[in-house]
Image (cartoon, rainbow, N blue to C red; front, side, top):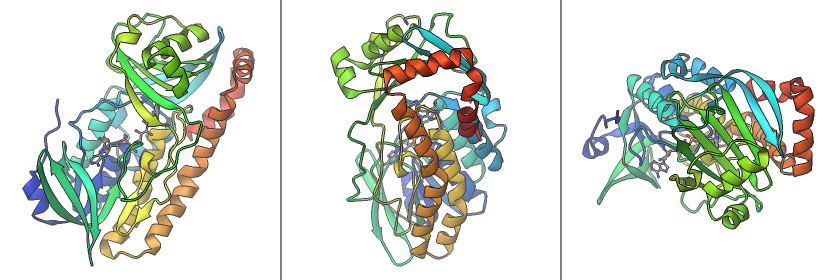
Length: 380
Ligand SMILES: Cc1cc2nc3c(=O)[nH]c(=O)nc-3n(C[C@H](O)[C@H](O)[C@H](O)COP(=O)(O)OP(=O)(O)OC[C@H]3O[C@@H](n4cnc5c(N)ncnc54)[C@H](O)[C@@H]3O)c2cc1C
């Protein structure tokens, strides 16, 4: 069911907000929830209609679930029908290894993100979908955000802006985030009626020469497919569907009917390093604050963790802006998110070597427990 706006554009412009959160993904929606439940007036805007689908592996790890619990939303995933995951079947060059998982679930992004927006609204946040936000000037006590719906644009004032516009989002003017030169690109789709091989409760990770494809059954039984590919490989295979078919074939997983003709959606390059994660009265979080390839499936945990971590700083900024808050946010992100991203990046980079990857799968086939330290690290 479509989530309705809780106010109109003119109403949004008629008052000064304590906080405006831009982007209603996990980072923006949870930050909004955290601020609203502390009694701050919050406007949450997103350019999309909600629920909205996005390219994602839909695996919500133990760390993400812990972030939800810490925000008082420990029941959210289960209430939305999340499917517990008992293992990940890794495949390379026809070899397979089943690595056990515990405390991780699969949940569609439509369900997760709509649940977070509902929770934010429930704690007092005002929600404005189908609204594009652009950052305006800093005033003495507020920051202007321009909100556009169709042809209409209004100026809205807020004491703090929480910017969570995602991987491709550009919000701070003049800021051009850097991407790694050999960065892969993402692609995803949802398939109906998948082969029975792709059972619920398991992640299927097919790896091949041009990238990898993760498959998991969602709470509605449909198969979520998310991939990271070399851009040259997608070009060579003439599209992400054909590229995914090739990787499934290389890995030795069953083909999926009509995969090439499904409505695939792509992403920008999968690495992002912005020069700044804060500006005057603005805090950036989630993918927009830095991203690495999603091999270990941690982006939702990083986004939710940042949403929780930001609240105390944003609250101080609502009371009185001080430029040291920008430095404090940069440091906090470095200590919490950036460090963990390095582990994910090193894993993804190492596994780009086909012979190494095949060796890892061969070893894990006999001793899956060897993956436990990484599985534990990712989830805790
Ligand atoms: C191929 C792939 C597989 C992945 N698999 C997993 C996985 O299995 N598990 C996991 O944890 N993570 C995974 N991730 C990562 C995960 O999807 C992201 O890290 C997560 O969605 C980040 O949340 P976010 O809130 O920062 O941004 P998003 O979820 O992208 O939300 C940003 C929102 O901002 C809105 N927006 C953007 N600009 C504006 C604007 N100017 N005005 C208004 N609204 C705006 C967008 O409409 C969007 O709704 C994967 C990513 C990819 C690409």
